[in-house]
Amino acid sequence: MDPSTQPTLPPSAAAPPRVSTASAAVVPIRSLGPGQLARISAHLLALEPQDRYLRFGYAASDEQIQRYVDQLNFQRDELFGIFNRKLQLIAMAHLAFAADPKRISCAEFGVSVARSARGRGFGSRLFERAVMHARNEGVDQIFIHALSENTAMLKIARHAGAVIERDGSESEAHLRLPPADFDSRVTELVKEQMAITDYHLKAQVRQFRGVLALLQDIRRGVRSARQRVFG
Image (tube, helix red, strand yellow):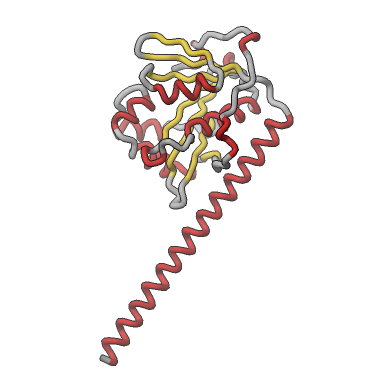
């Protein structure tokens, strides 16, 4: 939905978003770029039919999901992801900034979490991360367009203090954001650097395990050759 069509809430509605009390545990969330397109595509295509329906608002086919991935605008929007130890993208968020120059202070949030990663609060963490980035980019209103049956998404918005308007099978959640400050800017920089470091460490561990597995295969091959030669 085009952010330019959204109503603007009065200034008095603005309030600092409430942060989950569970956010003490560190969940590395890093920005995603064009280099992660393959992982983004794999994550979304792995979603089950019901999850696709809740994420996109319709029963998205593989072709429609791939078209969505191909049209991602990394220069305008921001995407965030959570990776497991195998560097598989298990949760991601899309913060889409308004394309209309007159509505640059608005952004829309969407999120998806792999079924195997449910129940860990990843959706809430991604929302918190997106809100922080939106504030630092000068956005004063973030909204979520979701099906009314998407109770998990609406719960995240409601817990953050968003105003939710329901219209039959669809709902809109609007959250006014306070201006950026020194703490929000520094916190985002620190979180992003921590996430990048975590990603590189996982990549190094994965590479080391690959080399170790190769050496073990070579040793097994040498051992088998010796047994054939010497009986």
